[in-house]
Each structure stands twice: as C-alpha cells, then as structure tokens.
Image (cartoon, rainbow, N blue to C red; front, side):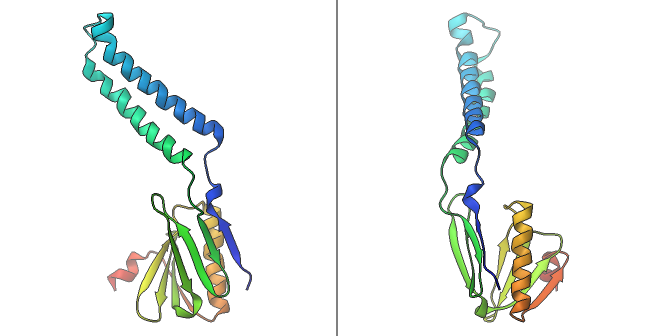
Amino acid sequence: MESIYFDLTEEEFSKGRKILLWSFAGLFFMGGVGVLIASPVFGLHEIKPSLCMAPFGISLLVGLISTFATIKRKDLFFSIDDDKIEFRYGVIKPVKYSFQWAEIKDLVMPHKEKKVLLNFKNGSSYTIDLTWLQKKKTHLIRKHLFNTAKYKDMEVRKIMHLSQLKKK
C-alpha cells in the first residue's frame, strides 16, 4: 500500500487576517479606554465607567484569538503507512501517537461522525478524532485507513454513530 502524509501546520491564518485580528483587538481596547476616561476627563457624567467592560471583554477575546493565530504550532501531522498509523495533533499541547498495524484487531468507522475507533488485540481501544480537520483531509484519511485495513485483511465495521457501540 502507498503511504499518506498530511502536514497539518500549513493550516494557519494569512498575514492579512492576523493584522485584522490584532487591529480589531486594539480598536476595542482603545474603545474601552475611551469609555473609561470619558467621565473623569471629558466630564461626560452620563457615561458610566462600568460600560467599559464590554469593549475590554471583546478586546480580550479577540486578543486571545489573535495570539492563538500568531503563535507557531509544533509540527502537526498525520501519517499512515504499511507499518503504523502515526499522528500528532492538539490545540494547546500537541501529543504524538503511534499505533502499529500488527497491534490493531479491527476498525470501527461511524458514518455520521469524523472519527475512527481502533480496537486493539489486547482489548483496549482508541478513538481518532478528525473533527478538527478540513473535510477533504478527513475524507482522505478515513478512506486510506479503510483501504489499508482491507489490504491487511482486518475487519472494518461501519456504523451510524460511535454511541451505538457503547449501548450494546
């Protein structure tokens, strides 16, 4: 079987989007400062200083999103070859996982979810959650997992939802 490798770090914000996010964060912060000093400095006593909480909250939220978009993530990838399934993903603290095909008993692929359940020969299982990926990459990864499992003569069960498996 052929190997498949996806570099997931390429999915980042463009430079223009980062600039827009930081600009919005700065504008809302300046709006909060303006509301805060409107009463004591400009004498506009009908504007209460507590109204500055909304612009500051929005600037904090947009600032967090901007920071997340600006920080470079570690090498996030998904690789499937003849020997193993290997991937590294995570939003805050990425973790690397590696599973040998020889250890896997069967695959469960839900039709309505972007997940794959790996059942191992020792009785344990692991769910690969692909909901954070683009639809095209999720489709290609699931298709390649299916084809590789069939090539290795593994059982591949298809169900509607993973929750159906838990009820039994």
